[in-house]
Amino acid sequence: MSGITLDRDGPVARIRFDRPEKLNSLTLAMYEELGAAFDEVRDDDSIGVAVLTGAGERAFCVGADLTESIPALAEGRFDISRWDKAHQKHTTLFKPVIAAVNGLCLGGGFEIMLSTDLRIAADTAEFGLPESGVGVVPAGGTLTRLARQIPYVWAMELMLLGDRITADTALRYGLLNAVVPADRLLETAMDRAHRLTARSGTALETIKESVLRLGDLPQDQAFHSEALYGQRAFTAPDAHEGLAAFAERRPPDFPSRRNVKKPLA
Image 1: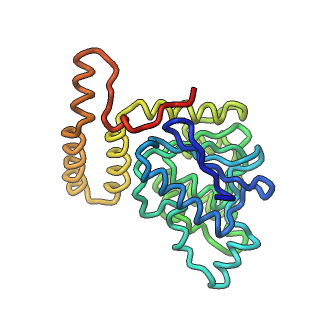
Image 2: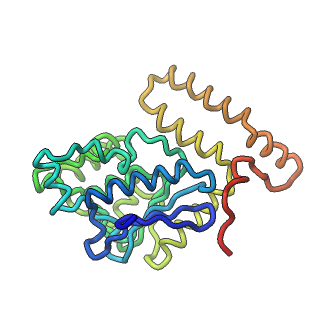
Image 3: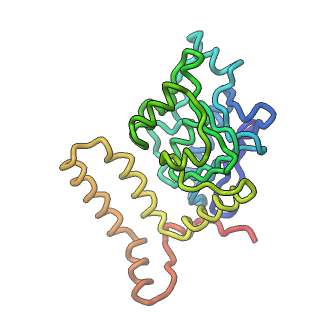
């Protein structure tokens, strides 16, 4: 991969937007590469969690390259649905993905952040959806996701006005889990990632899958499906091991984690 890189710290995959000279803006090829990286995380049993960040200090990702990707869409040469994997629409990646936002997080970068499960930002990060100012819309999942993740009026203000907000404001809106000094960003994200890999992979994937799939169902139907997800987890090998470890007062050795690579020394 060129504009998207993937390396590993034991069971944690680090995916990086790697075009810092262009503020990590996304070329058409990078969208394809990001989707492939998410597929690799999904399919590799030695990976338990992914951390997504940007190269350099200036930007996480400022979205689609205005000289290539956006013109391709505007001229009808390209169907935006081809970016679905990069935006994690219709995703089957149920392993946790953590965003470590290290600078400007704008447009498509903001949209990709919305597809992640935990979000840590540097105190220098800025966020915005400038699309309406150039006559387009944030259709990389944001028209669907944003008002489901934060209050309606804040979502509409971000999309309609396109103003940038600080990391502290994004935290207040509920877009982030934490804001930390820039020099502690990756350390904080990786610490959370490794904490997750010590927990049951079956449980984490069941939680994420059920939350993504049950949110739009009528309540009674959702409760029925929730019970099925719960039963699947309760009867899985991880649950048997976890309960035995609790009774024996020892750390669990979850079967779902036995193929996961150990952290680097």
